[in-house]
Image 1 (cartoon, one colour):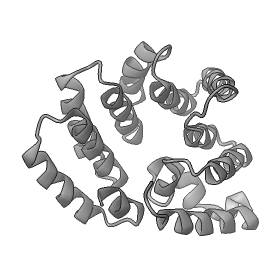
Image 2: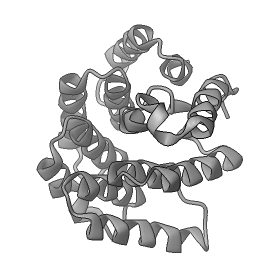
Image 3: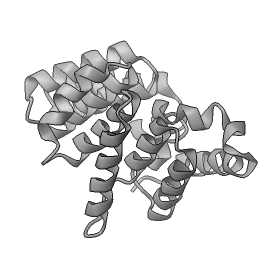
Image 4: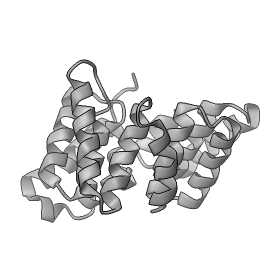
Length: 202
């Protein structure tokens, strides 16, 4: 239910649902991480970071908590803080790896960002990885054609994160200035964002 609300931009309802859920299970790590994500997609970045930090502090080893703290830091432009978390888990946490790629790109460290991209693509040869995050890193690097190529792959693979395309702050450079991407890509972005936001869950 909450995922569907986020997909279609009904953020106030999603936040209200998460608040009720947290009242019942206030110490649930996964729920706390999810709540941080809901705030982030609603562009309430201060609240997103605060919630993510609470979850991380409950158990710093919890992978989803690490990842969403990095993502919320990135959304708020707190790249140094994000890297302090993600660089600790580059060998073991794929989501941390994805967050680090974006952070390196936004921090003016393209060589490190491209290194992360190469590592994820190497993993992709033997197992499915969250290639949606490759698109966010390419977007941060300003490589829009490469970003669209990865988004097309995520669409074909029915990637779990793609339905958030319409509300994802990391995709704003593609969503808010479509003319700079070319008319065909602008049409692809708008039509796919609308289609996947309405896909059934699962």
